[in-house]
Amino acid sequence: MSEKTFNIIESAKAQAEYCKETGAPHFAPRGGTCWNCNKNIYEELPHRNHTSIMCGISVEEAKTQLVTGCPHCNRSYCD
Ligand SMILES: [Zn+2]
Image (cartoon, rainbow, N blue to C red; front, side):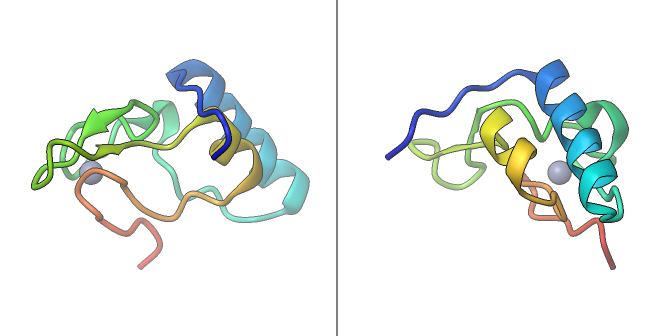
């Protein structure tokens, strides 16, 4: 497993750059705060039902993947 780093500012920037470079639509909330659950998607937090599992979008993921939903409440941003 590769190392994951979490940084809200870095990830928000990385995702904006990813969308710009790929021409993909920017679905993720600016700044990363989910309008549905109020948690930050770029922050590593325990899963709501399984507190032993940590959820969040890492800097590495924000750099290389399109964010389409919230990892905490599973709310989709693209429908
Ligand atoms: Zn959410």
